[in-house]
Length: 100
Figure 1: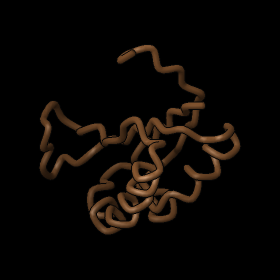
Figure 2: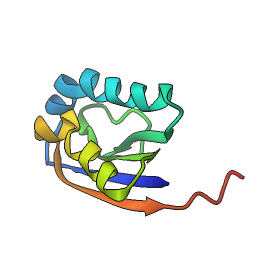
Figure 3: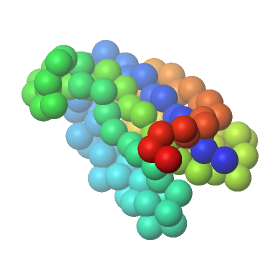
Figure 4: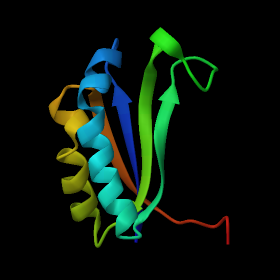
């Protein structure tokens, strides 16, 4: 089943993001290589694809996991969590309707 993982950043998270980004992306690469990643990316803090020093306000990952517990465990082990990038993380079941 698909799950949506929402990470909400702490204030001024940009430097923490930069430091832990390679490890964060490596985990997403594994999901992609396994064919389980639907989409992933950050929410710019301002209305721009490159927010510069404004940074990001959070992230969204939609991926396939065997259960809600598995998705929650995967999210809890994210380098952005251990680096203090995220103030909170929410995991919800997701039903993809489009694209078909």
